[in-house]
Length: 442
Ligand code: DLL
Image (tube, rainbow, N blue to C red; front, side):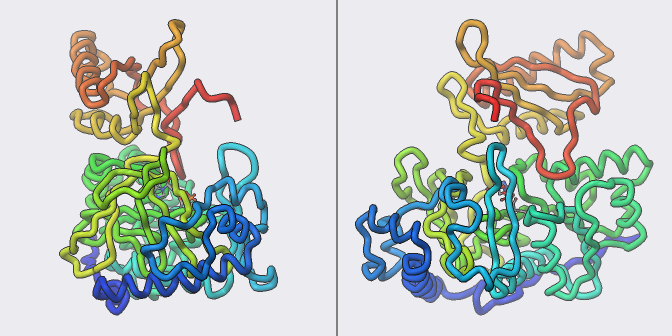
């Protein structure tokens, strides 16, 4: 069957292509209104503003943002489960939660209007990859407390597409329905997209023969090389999509066909980049921590939320016509950044090197441990093809090339463990790539 012909479009040009000056005025207006409401309705904000010595009456425009206090994930945890709500509980119609690695989950809540807004943000993102009525969208993000499944679900429905709410997992059935329903789009985490392609190969299914023409992947960091790998295996266009539960779920930023950064839905979510160590704002184009202000939401307005995700803001105009700023693909999380012998390492840097090696499987794990000499050891476990494993001469050559490339990129020496194919765990949702044994167990 031929691939679907997708024609990306702009769903809401009046917002997405707004002159920048008007956009900034809109953001300022929403900030003034939203900060006052947060101050009035949420005791935590009243206290934070007082501590920062800021009266909400002094907030006049987005220029005042850097004076406002930050909100941290710990604030949501400390007020668990509903202490940061800015509306009476009777107005809440949905609750989601993200599972942290430690302790209680982070709980987020939505009013009916918040759900409307979320669906609209998602619809814009899906339109940007060409979803239209009559098309089938196979939704392999997890349904449940995780925001991925329901986020994409309502966005696709809003555009009039037919959603298949298959959720993550059940890979054989994913393949069956992709064929039988002639889905135009697959949406899931990038690591699950790889896993599905592996299963397809085992079943003798060539994904290039299926109508699926694009995929929207997110919820975890993935490199440009991983995109190329997924595109080659599936014969599709792969779009990146970013979001986090606290801000709304997916729907915060998405790629357009230019795929030169992800457009942040700035009319709702105001981005800043800060130095994570000092909290100071950094000039556009600098790599730093993304901070988002989302005060237009009714149930859970957030002022200067520290995402802990590292990226750069790109303000130059985009060829697609959208005036919304873009952010670079996420480099990693500040808490995923491994500091080994004083050098900052992101898993995505290692992924990029691995994927430059012909025939290497993009399955890897990074282990950090404190060695016997009290220095940090970085070990990279990677699967290598049988053709190399069977040949001792090839293995030695391969190992020295790989270790040379990785050491060159990271600036530190690493240990490699070369494993047989399919020995590392696969993921149907977010994958866990880093095991830091220096950290105490949760
Ligand atoms: O992962 C929401 C989502 C669902 C986004 C589906 C995209 C697609 P959380 O579970 O709260 O929400 O996790 C949010 O995941 O702070 C990032 O660290 C990471 N993340 C999300 N999207 C990307 C991406 C959802 N495209 C956390 N690239 C965020 C890199 C991402 N990291």
